[in-house]
Length: 168
Image (cartoon, rainbow, N blue to C red):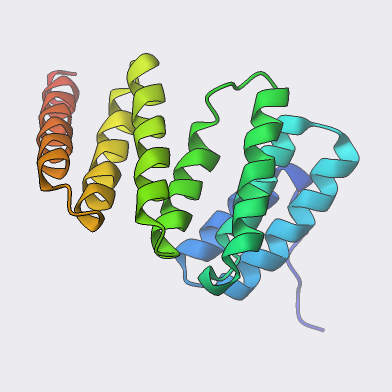
């Protein structure tokens, strides 16, 4: 018969789910994400479970928003249980999910939360990304002033990051 690929180690399942997402293989994302959740639950590792739940949530279609939100809220709780009090990644995905679902005010609140945590952690790259999302969410609620401020700050951070990288 035809050769088959060796199965991935369990710890790589969330990474595979995200790779499938990037190739627009949504059906595979949900399947691989669900497998990663099972493995992580069995391992009893809350941080691994947070990553698996986040990967799974990315494969949940936007019309099943409640299921996506539930997985991401659980991922946030798992991050907290593992000592990651900021839970930036699942919170960012939750903000994007609210945006996709049309709950722009909640998206803006969650996006601002991500930006505040990235600022606290002095994570300029994440902050720049979060601010662009905040700008989009602010525009969706007709807050042009906030959108402009977030965009300007993000651009300044990106320019500064570019200078740092070019100096290396």
